[in-house]
Amino acid sequence: MLNASSAAAPFGSPQLVRFKSIRNVEYARVNGLALNLDASVPQTEPRSPAVILVHGGGWVRGDRRVDVAPLFEPLNNAGFAWFSIDYRLAADVTQFGVAIEDVQQAVRFVRSRAGEFHVDPDRIVLLGESAGGQLAAMAALRAAPGVCLKGVIALYAPTDLVSLAKESDYIPAGIRNSIRGTPWESLLMAGLAQLSPVNNLRPDMPPFLLIHGTQDALVPFAQSRDMCKRMLQANASCEVYPVLGGGHGLRWWESDPKLANGYKSKLIDWLRRQLAAPSGGRS
Picture 1 (tube, rainbow, N blue to C red):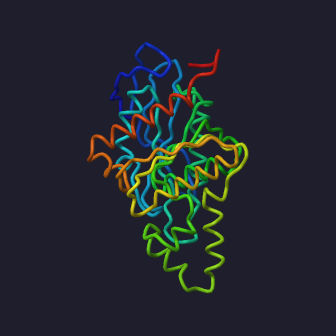
Picture 2 (cartoon, rainbow, N blue to C red):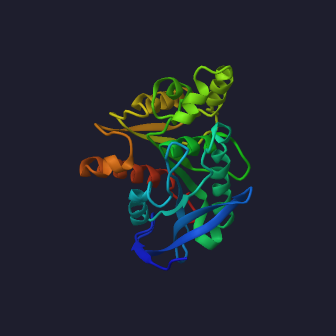
Picture 3 (cartoon, rainbow, N blue to C red):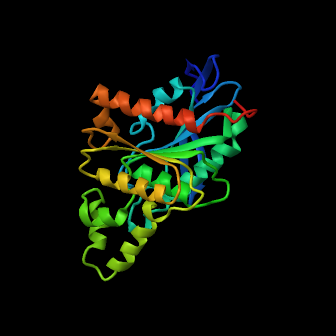
């Protein structure tokens, strides 16, 4: 555990709150594999809203400390606690999708330790980028005990895996090759359809914010546009924020201050609205 702290104005309060950094907290163990998280949480009450971060990396790689690092400071500056998690990577096609359960378990863990972390268990949002966006979306869309969320933010997330498998280079070569031209192609495509957020919409789904670069060459902007369109048709809440001229990845956007400031402002504004404390509720 690290004791480095920073002061920020907590959402909904004029006073300052100090956040402390925590590293290498085991939130689950699966078949002997420890799944860890890092966090930045208030040192004292009042309880803060929380964001659980799910890194990208094509489901086969990624780092909880590097890939989503541009989000750490903006979240704390706005008064939000955050938790950045590991999950099981897909070593082969049979492991594809198991990480959805890990994301759900991370939500349960944070909620179960809300008092210790000084966060509000009823004001938690999942935020995933790239493959992590698909995992976050599926974790929210698959109704599961203890997974109570106020919203989902998905950054340039693949929401239609069947379309990607057929048309995009985003799917890792090993998974693509295991699909193309095999007797199991139909079965595998059916599996990808089941793991596609666009095919898993439900009436009580939480609100979504989809942030996507309009020039994304790996996951087409149309994936977020079409996902939101279907959500709205299902009477769900969804917004799309286009990062005009943006490619694929936070690092790409961070190289242009205009793009970086734009998407961060939208992200924080949306979180403030979704995580506003109910009247008479906890702050």
